[in-house]
Length: 173
Image (cartoon, rainbow, N blue to C red; front, side):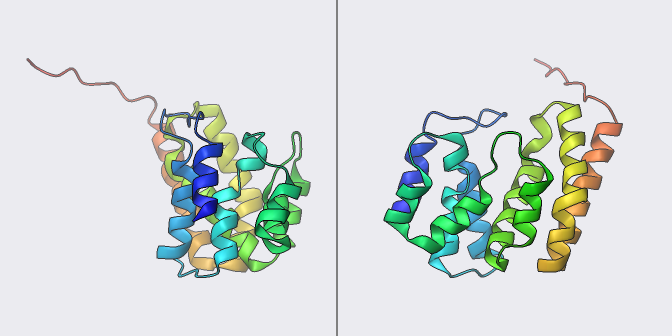
């Protein structure tokens, strides 16, 4: 699939905060949509692979996405692309979008919540607040079981943060 290769190439020099290749994130988002939510719409899967590419890479413009993948995919990607400094308006745009766009965003947020343990604690707390304020209400309207999963991920992270930093155990030799 061209979108897979394009996302892999576009994120090739990027790493997530924990050191993993950035490409693993869009791959997991697309895989979750297909394997767990049963999405079979190619445009949705393509947009899932490309959802961070415009924000994080200079490889493509939205016009490039339209020319290569068509207006539906480029529309999805445009809605999912958060501009610098954009706040609540971004989530309003997502909330008003088609169900497919909301599913991509919810899946994106789910993956970030599952992998944000390496982030600084204050960033995790802000992300949880943003999730509860904006994303969970979108999920409740789109797919209530995922709203529950997002809330559970937020709660688990809060519990972990409340316990404080974990001490590493030294291995006995």
